[in-house]
Length: 210
Image 1: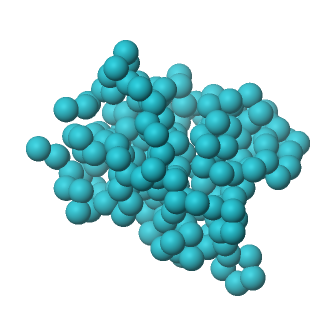
Image 2 (image 1 turned 180 degrees about the horizontal axis):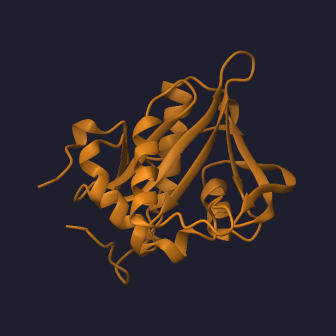
């Protein structure tokens, strides 16, 4: 039986679905981030000398997720397994601009124990579909460090193309890091989530499945 009803989902794929966070998710969300500290902190814009993974900071991070889960400029979603409802990561739609621009940026992370199964590729497909079909945006952008090969593969599989390179784009742990800029427009987008072929997982079962 699912712990989190699928009816709360905003978008649903074959193996994961997206839903907005609620107060009852705090403990599970915080625990997921805490045990993935080494996996996540090298990619996140954390100031040098600041510990974003103490209990109090993790609580503050979840407060931000609740505050920004649905605003004019931001939407935040938990990535959950269809089979169990377990939270496996997060995806955000931020920097929503209307008017003549009609664009947004995606940000996302997945717990290390859930990587390597194509789950993030599916989650990005769902978020992109939401941005185009529900928010009626024209362009979706994602930025990543050049050596983040997994993130590059995720967006490429979802039809994103590299548009440019931004030197010293974002400060991560006290150093300004170069980033690649990838994007897809509505004209070049196809609804890939339901039809994407999942990677075989027989040799590496997904934690929390069943």
